[in-house]
Image (spheres, rainbow, N blue to C red):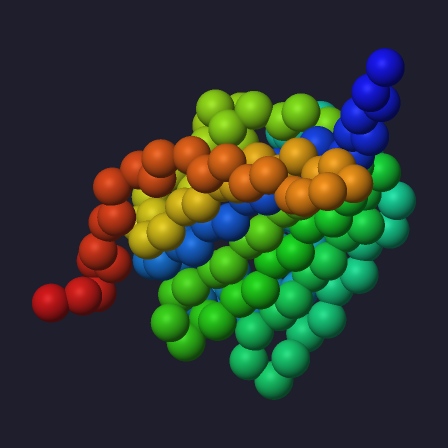
Length: 140
């Protein structure tokens, strides 16, 4: 009898968004509230959240019972980078819907989801098709 060691199953989500208000992206309150909204919409559980305001831009990190999430902003470019690692079986559709709801007018520049299945021998990565890339409204 062969025993198989199966490790954690995780999903890694990355989205880059453009055309977001510089004033919002430079607000610690806005970015912290945004993180809370993402966590709530995705029915995740925050253990601790920390937000740091830089001279220009904000970073917010949440330790989740399901793993972690980060938001980084560059207000001068109207740009937001969001990354989420989750081990709770969060569906791609649920993640995409949450992003579309929270950022209805933003240009989605890049979206990537990777499903990871780790075991003793290897980590199996399965990528999902990406939606079409949209150019920023500010692009020529």
